[in-house]
Amino acid sequence: MRTLVLSLALAAAAGPASPALAQTASQPIAVAVLPLDELRRGQEAYARSTLAAVGDELGLVPGLLPATVERDCAEDRMGLRLDYCVRFYVTRAEPAPGTATVVVAFDDWPAGRDGGRGDGALRVTCFGRGVAAADPAAQDTWLWPDAARMHGMRDLERDRAALADCIRAAASEPFTGLRQPDVD
Image 1 (cartoon, one colour):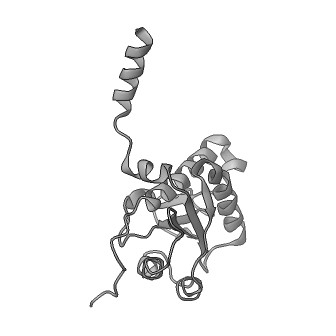
Image 2 (tube, helix red, strand yellow):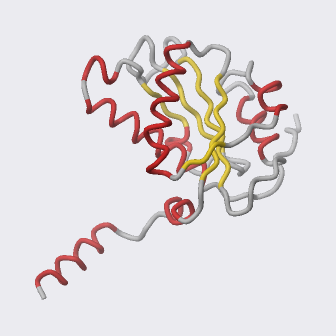
Image 3 (spheres, helix red, strand yellow):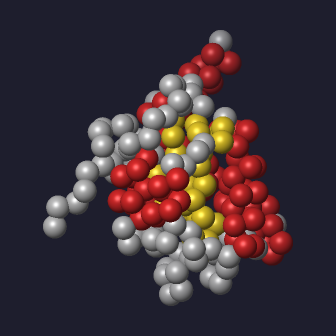
């Protein structure tokens, strides 16, 4: 009886499962990587190794970017039309049935921007098939390539959790139609 009461108390404390987790728990997530022009080789290697580390946990499968995304969006910077460019093409892509589609863009962390760990940090933004981010704070985050070397497991685990949350939030975006051109 005590075990049952404790289990019910823990379940109540945890609250209902988030829609993002409920939606992505039952379907594979196809992830395509978009390294932007400002990204350095060491940053990209760390980002890809972190992505590989969270891949099994999330059930990731390789995704394919339409050639137009790589050609037209790779020179854009985060916050400067990248969201529009990626979502314009990804909402038009035909995903595999039952698979969530996510594009993970890696970029150098802008100098002078708050957040990150300083020099060498990289910015990560995750895009799903929606026209807007499901969780903007989770879908625009940073990783620190010196995490394992400088400060041990705590920072490395933070990076893995941040990337996993970014991908989950993007995978939870509902497809609401095609991203249309902005009207100025």
